[in-house]
Length: 298
Image (cartoon, rainbow, N blue to C red; front, side, top):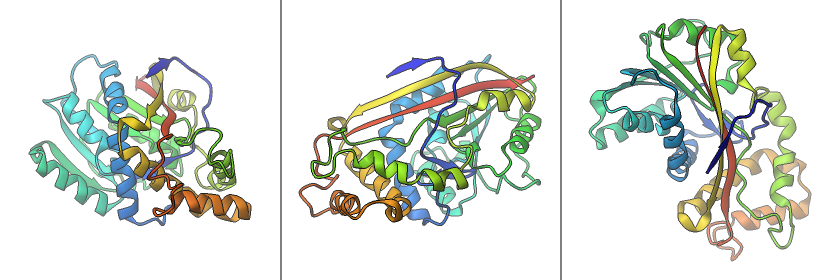
């Protein structure tokens, strides 16, 4: 893992609504499918999420935290582990994801430290979320219909000396080596390119540089960090399932723009019974970047 300070716009390829990760930008996917990807994302990238929570430039340990777009709890539980005296209000649009989060909290005996709130953060009437010391928004801000309005709402919500952490995805994870699959080298990049117009229309702020938007909304950006992720597939069997689930979701958007040969090769990768299946390959890795901005009320 490496980190650099970087102030140029990124162009991410996956993220989540003001409620949850949504890797291909489609809002109509089932909660169950999204939840599986969210859980794999949390498992595979746990070390990197912990690195971000450990880096946050806090003046004191937060006692009240709001997790905007909590999904099934990757950030929520990382924050609870990092700050053992904190309570987290986990906010999401999905009742199903919040139910899963509550079940995880009970299983970990953390139910007394978690409150779940179902809310659409594109609405003007946000629920009462208290005055948190830390607001965490991981890959959720880019799905706001009016992100400037949402940023203003966070500034008004935050305690006077509180911190706002915005995490953005600088690219959908890549899993295959450049020469794979052998029948159609470069297929993965072509599949991502085939989704570009969809994402430009439906998630225009994905991969954005949040620094200027935070400043315009009345924040002072204290620090920024980009974390490069490069995890060898041999480290976890979950990486095969992560790759399979992620590319399955990309297929739904990319299919109309792919050549018949590329679509056949992609389906071969997604066929659990194929010898070329992503679930059986030994040459996978997880390669991506995540950038975090730490900001305070100006």
